[in-house]
Image (cartoon, rainbow, N blue to C red; front, side, top):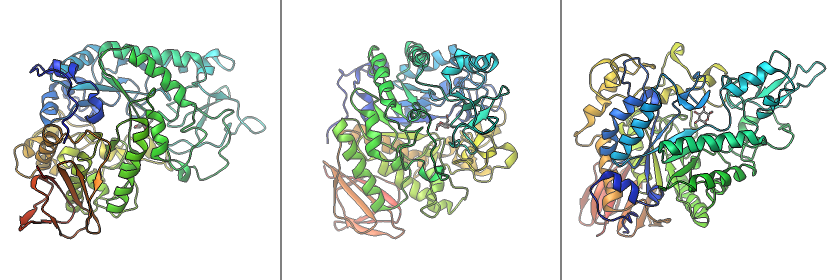
Length: 555
Ligand code: GLC
């Protein structure tokens, strides 16, 4: 097996490691920190940057390469920070710019990279531009930086077109003077008009601000949404939800977005240090996702087709092949992701029937879900390319499906018919210790209540515990990087396997995933490197239990 692509000289200093690994992102494992829910340093029940900084050694020891931080900018928090009022300021609830600076420096000292979230599709309605645009009234040039329109109907009482908000209800809200503005998400998140040059100028300046602060890259929120079809045409269909993600929409995945990313790439490339962009682009197909990662555009795009695949060997194989085939021609690494802050955690998705999608409100069979989640994670980490891990998945955390209504904060929940609505369940603060207030999350409570059994799932409880999910991740991440170089390459060789079983070879490495509920017998390919369940080997054969992944080396 080829080793991962370290090109620098041997050097013990972590900083030198960061500086010397070119193309580090091609095989990186990137860990998503949701700052509200990771660690709370001041006991106010809300996570913060100082909390993240103080826990960086945990992340280094876990064996990840980079941390992606969800937004921590000044924001009224109408959508948990994805409504940004000031792109160059830290919200006081998370700290200040000095805290951000200290976090970036400490991460680099530990050999970790920092990727920040950029939200260019929309601002907060409390952004200076939007507040002034509303205050100045129709005709204000600031209104051109957003999408303001007169309404339809005799008195302009109807929205300008038939688009719906992703969170439910019309995508338009009327202001007092009668004009309407477009918001693909909550009304507090007005969409920018990317046809206006000031918008592009502003975002290139924001990129530079954070690049100058030393960040290693950006995750681009709603990267597929910036450009809207000319004239904002009606969709002409009342089934928007069914079309979403399955078709190019007049507001999603328009070809015009790519010109923006080519410009951004020029800005990024002015900076030393191998920095990256990763797109959150929900496109209909992996082939269309590949457009975002052409050589002069972005570096990576989340593989939502993979995230949306049920625990089914045949379906997984198809999406793995299609992904690798789609990325190869553009030369971008495939990415793999199972969970994030917008979907039900995979331990809960896989605890339920297939076909329910990524928003599930049922606990399902927790034990089964965990067994499958561990197997799924090991499969993901065996694939070539870059993998994303969402905080808490290394603990096997399930979604909290029974949060009381009064604590919920997901804006979609309050808008009823939207696509999501139950994202709070994957955002509950993670447990660090067995006991104590908020299980070590902080000295106070936690902004969403944690289930009583989370003490036993804590980092403290799982550290050093044989067979724990945390130790499984640690071993897998170390083997992936140090021993087998699994992030390298762009293909897998499928091996013959029983129905419901995936088996592939990559040089001297073999991965076998049994997605059936029953044990299967496969050849003993060599030495077991790591397994998500108890594998027994005898006389050249191995018995792999149901819902289990095993890694082998034939060396
Ligand atoms: C992205 C974010 C999500 C947010 C939405 C609007 O999909 O991941 O959390 O609600 O954009 O910004």
